[in-house]
Length: 311
Image (cartoon, rainbow, N blue to C red; front, top):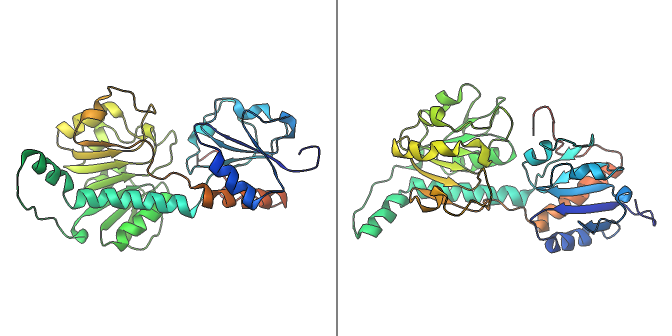
C-alpha cells in the first residue's frame, strides 16, 4: 500500500508491452496505484504482482506481497521459482484467451482434416489432383488435457462433428467427448490428430516422446501446451518413421526457436511463435482487477493454483 493508502499493483510481465495492459487497468481500477517493473517504487509497498516469465527469485524481493496473478493459463514458470513466496497464485481464466486458443486449434485441425498439406505439396509440384477427405465424424481427434483450454477446444471440435477423445489426469464429463484417464499410449492409438494442451508438471514433462509417438500411425500433432511436453529430438524420427505425418508447434524448449534449428526448414513442421492464444488485455485486464478486488474483500482468489498438482 502506498503513502496515500492505495493498493499497489506491479505489472512485471517480461517480454510483454505494458501499454495496452495499463490502459485496461486504468479504465477499471483508477483507484489502484499501478506500477511497471523496473519502476516498482518502494518494494515494501507492493501488494500484488501481475506476472509473466519472471526471473528466478524475482517475487521474493517484495516483503509484503499478498498474491501473484499470472496473465497466462500456464503457471509452470512461476512454480519453478526456487525461492517462491508463500502467497496465493492465480492463473488466468479469460474468455478472450480461451476463444483465441479454440480458434487456433480448430483452424489447425481443419487444415489437417481437409488434407491441406497434401494440396500444398501438389502445388509445389504443379499437380492437379482431387483428394477425398473423410467427413468430420470419421476423423478421430485426441485432446491431451481437458482443463480450461483443452476442454473448450474439445467441446468445439465435437460441435463441429469430429470424433473427439480427451485424456486428463482425472475423469472429465464433456458433451460429445469420450473421456479417458488411463495409459496415454492406449489413448493415442486411434487418434489421427493429437492436440496437446496439458499443464506442464513433472508427470507430463516429455510425455510426447519416441515411445508414446510410436503408437500413432500417420497422425498430425499440434502442440500448444508447453515446449517441454515434447522430446524435440524424437519428433523428426517420428515423422520419418510415419508415426506422424505433420506437426504444428507453437511452443518450444528454447524460445525464440534458435536460428538454424531443423524445425524451421522441415516442410512437415509448422512453426508459430508461441502465438496460439495471446491474452487480450481488453478482457483479461478487468478479470485481474476483479480478482484483486475479491481478495481485498477477504474472499479467496478465483482460479487458484494448486502447488502440489502443479497447476
